[in-house]
Image 1 (tube, rainbow, N blue to C red):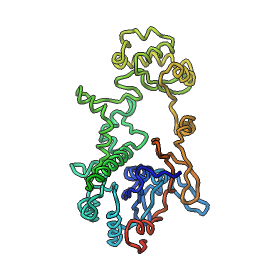
Image 2 (image 1 turned 135 degrees about the vertical axis):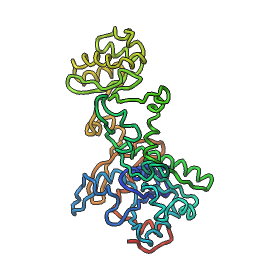
Image 3 (image 1 turned 90 degrees about the vertical axis):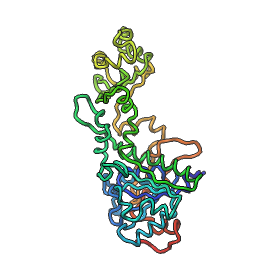
Image 4 (image 1 turned 30 degrees about the horizontal axis):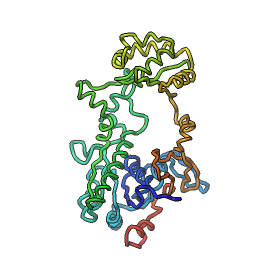
Length: 393
């Protein structure tokens, strides 16, 4: 039985490109919303040109990067420099429940599509503006990319080894955390709109999103006045809680309790460490973790990572290999989760994608729509959402 998603019936317009806005839109689409992506004619979202590009039998190429963030959406191509197309977009806004955009602050106002203008057309509209630094303030007009906001937010100051230079996170957390906050807040606002009949304007910044997920680091600073530094894979309040090198490869353990610490001591054949004053409790181990790591490392290098992972698994100590994405996609537990699904691209190429990763009783995620060709749904969306029947090119 085809059970609709929890957001079925919700109409969302997505204006923006690359990552933050499209990721927010993809989350809403995966949960059943009808998400219509507004793109410029000709090129569309810049991510459409990002490799890897899959070649169809007829020579049509399609970006797998783009597909990963734009399944379950429809595409309408409108030239926002053309007054007729702007009017068509206003008609869509009048019929929408939510709008997500990630232009620079001020762009929507210059187009006549700012919140106050759209509110006059549709008082129930929930509009979410995603930007690097927010809609107001000294940095509002600055351009922003993921790496610059990672640097500004403080995230890069705690990422990497103590002796390394600045290191960004290997995935674009600035873009994707903003997209997560945006989708979550849009959904919450829609619930309020259902009760009050009034929409709202959401100001979602990448900077604020990264500061938001840094609550442990900021609270540490507020508490002792000292900003956290780089610890590599280690932890400021737990040890051993980091990566170690076995005879052949790296692995990670997280012995965050006294009971688990005792199991580590016994596993390496040094039970006396558990009662040593420098390692007697969690705070002591964290304070003396460099010396502790040296002692453990001298034992771990004697055997393979496979041996240690099996040993710690047997003892109930959380441990993990350091997987590549090839490793984790082939992992039996990931296969059990069903997190990888087949995806058909518009050019006929079959590929794979990672599905919405959260389970929910009564709803099974599926790819309802393949990622769209540019402007594929102009006529269909205009016919369904508005009374305008004329085609838009």
